[in-house]
Length: 167
Image (cartoon, rainbow, N blue to C red; front, side, top):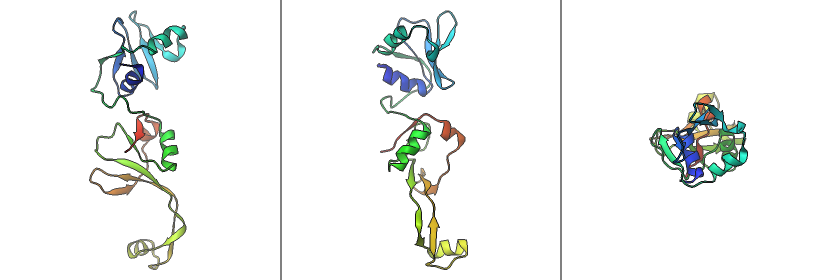
């Protein structure tokens, strides 16, 4: 496989290598760690020979040596910061790590000028039905059962790098 797919597999927890290697590469501490045949572990950012390392990356014979079953290797993933940028641009986003089918997040612009309260909102907030209710922007999630909820990301969601576009 090409490194683009190997990289996606790395981020999903797989161990990747080239066929002739006794060592392997693994995703650890938000970086690729190169586990060498002599037992040394090097961070890819600290490689002594950039040309040598890039030559490996350009190869098309990467293989998964071990790790969880990986899927969707052609899907581009990104950080939460990029997810927020895309949400504000009107895109739906999801995480590869979420187990529920059909779950995704959207950005709601809110009602900065206000919207007339319905009966339920008026009762909840001690307002009169029809009063203007001002609502700031918020995130909303589509749940597994098809319902929708206001959503605040967990710290794990904020630090995750497996965000992708939801179709």
